[in-house]
Length: 174
Image (spheres, one colour):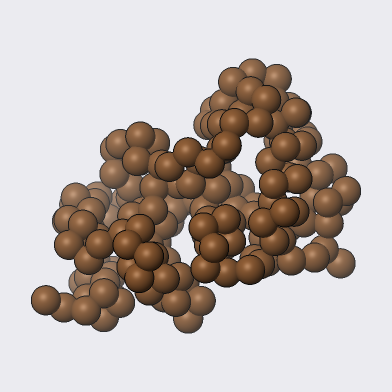
């Protein structure tokens, strides 16, 4: 049975994954990992991340790290679920450099919108925490949604009208 991930265990994971990097790359943390590292949650069930570029050395290291650190790790990011801004990488805040691997928080606006689209209670609470900490703003979330809305057709499971309504409910309609 794997344990919940707190900030210390995530840092251990980042150091170990950084040591496994065979070439420069970036690891974009998202979801609960961002929530824990930015301080509005103490733990998360798993560490969600996206590797750019995919590196065989890193992908091969993850299963062993999951076992040795007793962590759940998933390759998942907002762009798996919703369209993201073309400059999402530049919008992703730096966390730490470990060896050849740079860790960043996946674009917080993409994270917030993917959480709103998903609509789970914990996701919506995370969005409220992001708003309260001024990590995202209501106006910019609306602008980001307007930017990605024309590309929602690429995600057939998403109903654009329902997504917009969920956004309005989550951030309050002004």
